[in-house]
Image 1 (cartoon, rainbow, N blue to C red):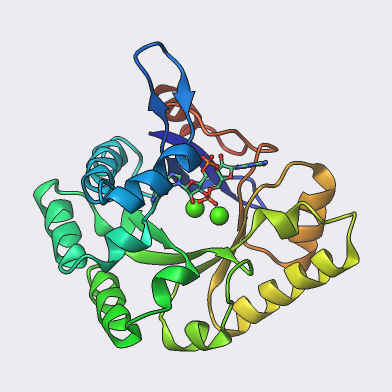
Image 2: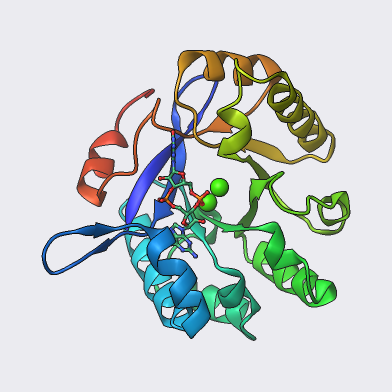
Amino acid sequence: MFYQPIVHLQSRDIFGFESLFRLITNDNKVMMPQEIIPVAEETGLIIDLGQKILDSVLNFSDRLPENIKISVNISPVQFDKPGFEDELIKSIKDKKVNPEKLIIEITESTLMSNISDKIKKIDKLKESGIQIALDDFGTGYSSLNYLKRFPLDYLKIDISFVSGIGKDKSDEMIVKTIISMAKNLNMMTIAEGIENEEQLRFLKYEGCDLGQGYYFGKPASQSEILKLTGKKGL
Ligand code: C2E
Ligand code: CA
Ligand code: CA
């Protein structure tokens, strides 16, 4: 697993890290998640792979300072599996990890079907102390109904809107609207894919709480990440 820093936009102090899957082949080629995750979802292998990812992330989280969060992407197939939440809560207990360190990232497609079942799962996870982020917000169906019905903690503003800041007025308007809506619903915002000063300035001005992107740091190995955790701001 690789990890990308998520920072508080005002202070640039580290808030946490998003875990991102990489597959290193025997001949040392790096395969990216988009080459692997969709196939793993189709074949059902995502259940085992997702479990391995969670184990690895939980082990790593134990090596990070108490106040540092770690977020992990959960595929809809994995989230849908009966008992997913119980297994996760159990492995956190077994590994003696503080559940408040963990954020799980789900997408709108996860929330689309069996809504009452999903609400129960999310409630259980939240009761245990785990937080929930809604990933890629704005790219899917973006039914405002989800935001009202699900007790989510963070909205992640998709990279496609952040990359339009400074170039496209409608992207800027969408970003502004997402931030103010999240505030009104008591959710924090995390901007993805911040690559330059102009995007950062805009997001700070509009009151976005947190952000990640190449401007602060690319996804990196565990040893590189451990070197960052002592730093005051990125
Ligand atoms: P995502 O969750 O939206 O992750 C953010 C993606 O944006 C990552 O791509 C990250 O490397 C990339 N990124 C971060 N900052 C920047 C930036 O400043 N500019 C640009 N252009 N890109 C940036 P990555 O690692 O290739 O992951 C792609 C997608 O694969 C993820 O999108 C997520 O949906 C999925 N994925 C990654 N790891 C996992 C995993 O462990 N489990 C599951 N189920 N899905 C995963
Ligand atoms: Ca994500
Ligand atoms: Ca995303």
